[in-house]
Length: 240
Image (cartoon, rainbow, N blue to C red; front, side):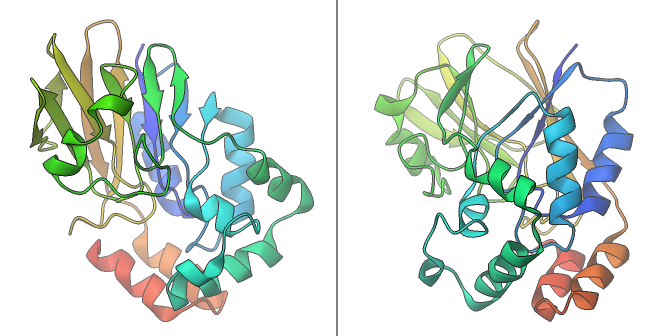
């Protein structure tokens, strides 16, 4: 059975629930690449679900920001406001859980897990050139990363990088190194508002990219009811 690979849930319970319905019965463990919280209005529900169901989780930058482990001066005003609100909303137990999440890269069952770059957990991987520069830091032929909220990733073949287009399935080739981004569950930024995730089939070396519609209006209404910045609600409709 494959792994269910999640990233960047961002306290969006509606998106998470839609992914779980879509993926039901198709995996035997769940892996998460960080940013459980921040931006969305259901941080406790998402963290409690994660604690109960996810095999391994690494921390994201918003997990640090929302627990006081990161300097909020590096965040835009909407992100800062969300981090402060989330910090106040978290239960002591859930805050403690987030504070203790391990940093990436983390080796797990033959793959590496990282939130951002394998060289720096807070660095964004945006271009094939970014991926090429990481070759000395790659400990496994396959790394999963998040942070950009853009589904896809990069493949290195003889040191040259190219972008992976998330069209259905990706079959891993011998001799190549892959940096795979499952996309964001709770706040996609690739122009597609549907929740993004992936399956990894280790038995045959296949990654399957998935998108699923969810109740965007419900998630946005919760953000507005919590008096979080309106921008955080509006962007969900556009996937930006």
